[in-house]
Image (cartoon, rainbow, N blue to C red; front, side, top):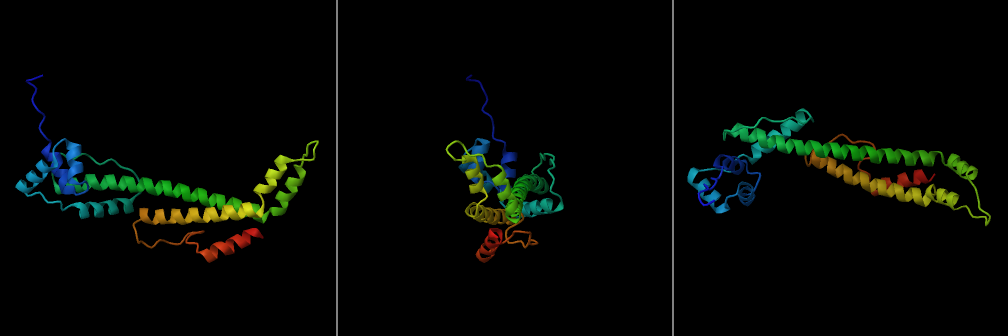
Length: 208
């Protein structure tokens, strides 16, 4: 319709996003349907400063360290420094907490697999005996199912699995430290920080 009034930019929201310093000016422009040049011009006119990013990160660190639970932060309509910090810090905290949960589940799964591998190695004779009991060759003397079973519990298979688990744990440990703040020293956990020498020693133990 020719008489339709053009929607005005939500400058209050744009100011919040600009001052937060989390998104680039172009990202804010795309999000709010206004050109980045218009945002820069208004920021210069009204003296907006992108000065809250450090405070937002500090607040996010505080939220994560207090409790790893997801809470909804009430929406602030006023462009106050406190409202900007609270809202943006909660978003960052929610993401980091979700990452910690996923990484923790993956680490738990990897450690369970490692425990299973240890059990298979410690009880190798029992697994061999089970293989003998399961033998059921066909009329040609072939027993493909039992052959597959013996291949699964063989030393090369276990060695390969051990190496893959070690690499998986190394990756998870790196991700875990990033989620708990880069550079932070955490208590060493079982199977953590395996060196090449430790990996080879562990493989030798599993080989029996």
